[in-house]
Image 1: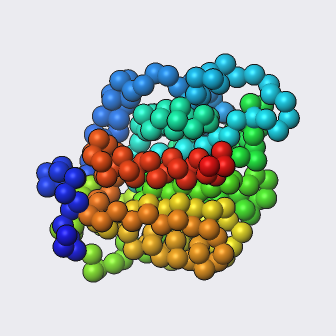
Image 2 (image 1 turned 45 degrees about the vertical axis):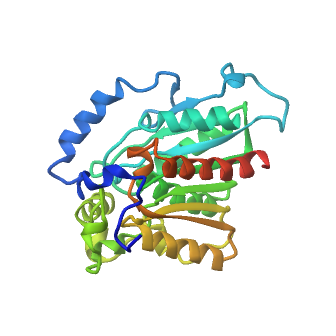
Length: 310
C-alpha cells in the first residue's frame, strides 16, 4: 500500500468527493438530514433535558423499563456526541451504532442533541454536552462512576473537550474518552502541506468552514480558547483513559496522533488505533467492510474494558 492509496476493502473511496460540507452546501444538507431522520430507528426514547437540549436514550433489552436500583448497582453508560463538522448532524444519525453498543455491552447509551454552529458557536455546543452529561449522571438507573464519553469527528472533538471541562469543574469523572477521528486542532486549517488527493469527505475547505463557524471571531484574532480546540490545552494530566482511532488518509490523522502522544506523555493511558488507507468517516460510509467492523469492534472492546471490566 502506497502512502496515499486507500484500504482495499474501502471500495467507495474512488467515487466519494473530497468536500461535502461548505457554507454553500450546508442549507441543503440540513434539509436532507431532517428528511432522512424520519426513517431512522425508532427504538430510542427521546427525552428533553431542558428547553435547549434533548437526548436519545438507548437501553438494552434488560433495561428497557428503568427502575430505581440499589445504591451502586446502576447501569454503566456512554454519552455519545454526533459528528458533522460542528455545523451539521443530529442525535439520531448514529442510532445503529448506539443500539449495537447498548445491546452488546448491556449499557445505556445516550446521544445528545446539541445546538449547532454557526448559529450557536463555542461554548454553546460544549455546554449543551455538559448539560447532557450532568443529566445522565443524575439518573437513578445509572452508575455515575461508570460513564464514558465518546463520539465521531466533531463529536469526538467535543467529547475530548468535555473531559477537559469535567476535569476543570470536578463534578463528574468519566472513565473513558472514546474518540473516533476527533476534530481537535483549529491550527490544521493553516496547513499548506496536505495532499488533497488522499482525502475524502472532509477537506481543508470544509475544515476551515467548520472551525470558523464554531469559533466565530476568535479564530481571526488568535484568541482561541483551549476548551474550544483541545489540542491547544496545555495540561492533559488527570484525564480519563482514551481510545483514539483514525485513518492515515484522514485530514485529522496528524493532529490525532499528536494528541495521543501528548496524552501518553502526560501519564494518561491512551490507545491509538490507526487504520492504513482509511479516509474520514469510512466506518459509517462503508459500515459493512471488514475493516470498518474491526474498527467498531475495537471501540466496543475499549468500552467493555472501561465500563464492565473486560
